[in-house]
Length: 105
Image (cartoon, rainbow, N blue to C red):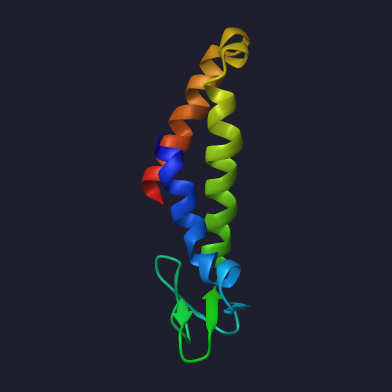
């Protein structure tokens, strides 16, 4: 049930670009200033209503890819009966690692 709410939430940053006339702008490293702890500042907000633009940076792209892989591929594999039957300890460790990475994010 956590995946059913997390994955749409992560992808919701792109909803205005998918369902409206907003354009998508990817901010490169040159457009942003890296700060500790690896959070980035943006020259425009995530949704710039004045210019009808949705801005995403490498942080957002990493989160989109990482959460999608985590909740749609890795976690379902770790809870599958077949994988647990043959590699129970690996399935358990992967599942705990995914939970840890989700918590850190």
